[in-house]
Length: 428
Image (tube, rainbow, N blue to C red; front, side, top):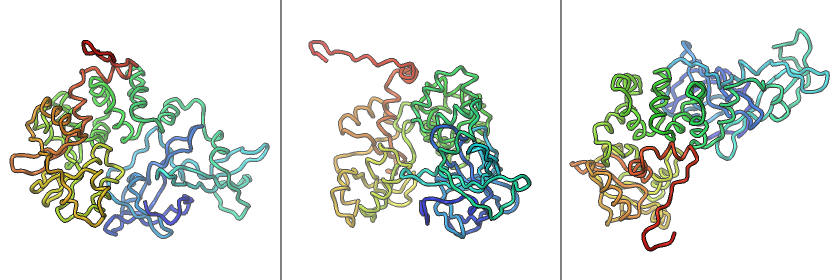
């Protein structure tokens, strides 16, 4: 994320124009959304509330804010034009924290004058400092020239956190957990509590956690959410995981959720649903890393380095004729990241393809796919259609999901260790 500084005072954001990737005006910054404060880590900044076109307020995620400058904020990615609705796990910095009266020191009340946010090395923005003024009756909300002092989040946190926040506290505790750990916490809750907490999680965290739950719990959870929220979560999931989940839902609910999803995301899922579940087409993701035949090693590595690319998908780049979205133009070949790292940045990636690696067909069954992975020692493999176009890629975790026992996720979340079988005549 480009920026002029890694610390920004939020009062300076209010009213700044917001421009999209083409330079067109989207609206102005109204507020900043953060995770509900807790006594642990400083609250993560989730995104901006934007007064869009003077008609309504919308939300834009912080990871899609490209640059914050003194005169404007630049954003990227798809803009969700639905009206912003605050969730129980969220707080508004300007609306909730500005002008809040705190008793930070003995017998002295102070007013929150401003709040700073800082981006860490993981590129996550968090609240970092509070600017406070001594509170005097009658001055609430009035920006006088009284002396301002700053305190770090840790000194102010005890005044902001209610020990009885219930769900908000639970959500805050889950904020920094890995998806598998969040899934374990949800798995251990009773169904009513699970829905309550899941409803308060943000879309990305819930989507990541849902993918780690047993299939029956995935179905129950998605079915219990409000339809619009369920559609948002499915949009955020990996397309192949969303397709697997939707295929397990009642037909009427599945179609309703697909209709509510963004057309492009729904189209990817519908395509995957058209293939057999236990085939390469049914297991693949339609979003592999693709580069054109004239792309260089440097360009390929830049694509593989993108944060949203999973480790498995980042192990290989696929070279295709335009168009470079699936279904692509004619599939040319694949280059391993290890080979790319050993060659000059200016070399064409198309000259480094693995000539021994033949793509999978979309109808290859799970046994064929698993043997293919074992034969070539791969973590990702290309899938093509009858026309020779790249339509997706299967990753090793997709294969494992389909060859492990149906209840493996539930057993793992219950703390069971898979038993290791001992081949006859051998010792483990």
